[in-house]
Amino acid sequence: MTAVSEHLAHPMVDRFGRVHRDLRISLTDKCNLRCAYCMPPEGVPWLSKNNILTTDELVRVAEVAAVLGIEEVRLTGGEPMLRQDAVDVVRRMAAIEGPSGPLEVSMTTNGMALPKHAADLAAAGLARVNISLDTLSKERFHELTHRDRLSDVLAGIDAALAAGLNPVKINAVAMRDVNDDELVDLVRFAARSGCEMRFIEQMPLDAGHVWSRVRMVRGEEILESLEQAFELTPLPGRGAAPAERFLVDGGPTTVGVIRSVTKPFCGACDRVRITADGQLRNCLFAREESDLLTVLRSGGSDDDIATLMHRCIAGKLPGHGIDDPGFLQPDRPMSAIGG
Ligand code: SAM
Ligand code: SF4
Image: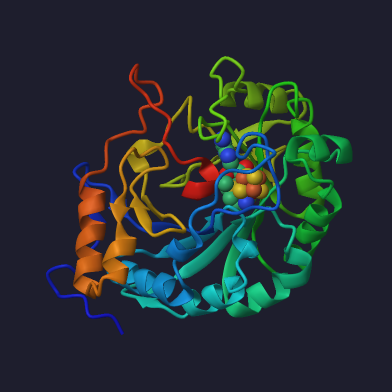
């Protein structure tokens, strides 16, 4: 039971009227892959182990967030399944009741642990899963991630489907001269498997700071490439979702394109994030964080947690500013923020 006072127990609304319903929680910054757009081959300095939120702390934060109108929790990382307690976190979070019902718990994962854990995750109450897969070529996968693990990811997709997780979405970052010749094949693969394929524009969030706007494959190019093979019909009703969705050849297969850079959806953003070390972020690209860890570890009350969350959202900027002349990439890489 949370003890959030009545005057704080209301949705988190920012200065632009955006109501925040979606909480992204990074369970760990560690990962067992080294995707080039995210982490360098040698890894990055890991967050201090002592600062990683415990299961109880994560659950407490989610309970307060539910009182503040959060309806969906997405577990991410780093690789969330590297946390020993991942299934337990799902079970405890899925049992949290907010004002409009139980929290919907989903996960973004590289899929490698799913052959072993998909059934447990589904039984624990995981609603949906997004699995990252940028290529169907074993050699390319190895080159891109520095690990020879394509077959584990493919087995993970099968396991997610067999466990009844629905929908299973497959995320690929489109990269020039890396996988931009595979976009159609990836859609066909997803359709055969009964998944939805989604392509993401590469964002300036790599630890090596080597992102280049000129090299980035733009959403428009992704669509042009798909339109060479398929008839795409836009689907209405996007809401706060980042993906623009299209019916492929009249359906039922669909494909999504996430144009975070060239067609930002900041105006509809309903997301707030917590890093594995307990820092609240109101945007992937935020330059400032709110220190929830200290509140949690210094005897803060549920009202203190709620106050910090409201304050964090109150300070949210209208957009991520990638196009502003003064744009600065956040200090944390994607793996330490939580994608
Ligand atoms: N390890 C898990 C995974 O890969 O699915 C979860 C964390 S990962 C950071 C979450 C998502 O962010 C993945 O779909 C990944 O492809 C995406 N991502 C990582 N770096 C990115 C970047 N620079 N631009 C766009 N998407 C990125
Ligand atoms: Fe790991 Fe996910 Fe980053 Fe790839 S994108 S290195 S799987 S955290």
